[in-house]
Amino acid sequence: MKSEGLIEPAGRGAWTITQAGLTLSSATAAKRVTRATAEKALQQFLGRVERVNNDPYFLGKITRAVLFGSMLKPETERLSDVDLAVEVASKEADLGRAREQNYERVEELATQGHRFRNFVEQEGCWYWEVFGFLKGRSRVISLADYAAEKTFVLAVPHRFLIGQPEHVAPQLASSTLSRPTRSRRPRDCPF
Image (cartoon, rainbow, N blue to C red; front, side, top):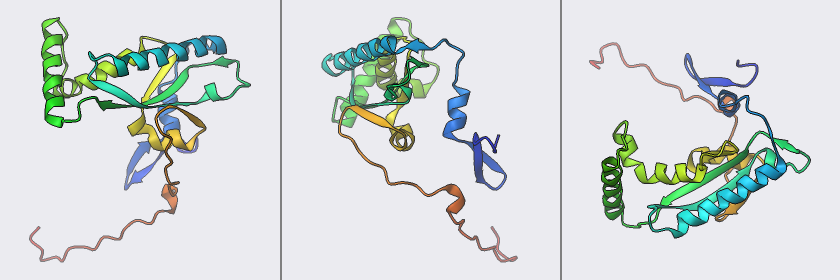
């Protein structure tokens, strides 16, 4: 797996999955779609973005949407999906008020029968509600969190659909980084 670039060393005896490994792990055997179907799915997605940003029901807004992947290759007629990365931010600038609104939404959804698996799901309810709506149960749309995937998205061909473009400084390969030397504790050190 190392020779295929799916994993890389992450420290002494530890490994981490590379972006290529993550891509492989999420691959499906679904049939490819035509470019026309992908374009239609993208337009529907952009309509959902507009609704999220304009509808006061949603507690979050889309500040960036970036298209990347095979959709940007005009010579490719059949696509596996439409790769998009989105940045979701709270509509409420006051953190305390935003949290209060989120708790109200959690209670509202709980009374409607929604079950939250854990505390993290409750805390991020506003975010996951927006993210799920944007996905729209579409098999064609593949969504990623822009904040989490920024380095990867900006390193490959991409196009900003919403928001200001930004650039990330190229990172050094992990093999070129020098590891800090650790000094040993003296034998008589109590900890």
